[in-house]
Amino acid sequence: MSSGGLFNRINNRLEADSPDETPLTMSDVLDLPEDQRSLMRFVLRAPEPLTPHEAADGLGWDAAQTLKVVGDLSFIGMIDLVDGRIKVAPMHRTTRSTPGGMWSTLNNL
Image (cartoon, rainbow, N blue to C red):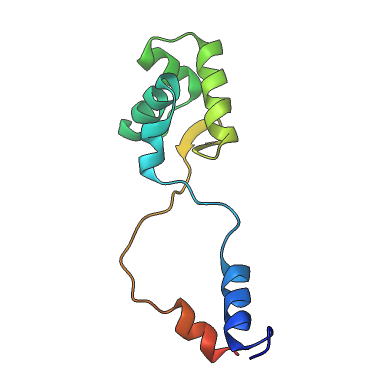
């Protein structure tokens, strides 16, 4: 068999289709430092999106500390600041699926 065989082409196609970084999940919130985890928990439990100042008041923090934590969480992709309100960024959900990645790739060869 040659090195450019069918299985190498399948592997190359699967690697090209996979994302470069692992998407964030809700379990990643558990690994955050305490201040970031507290803000995430507060934002997740809020009935509507909060401003950073509302979050600071609710947590009993000063505005500078809250803005720093919001910036840190935004930088790692956990939250987005949209129209001055903190929104949780879409996260990867683990779902059950039928194995189809390889089979659909075989159809494209």
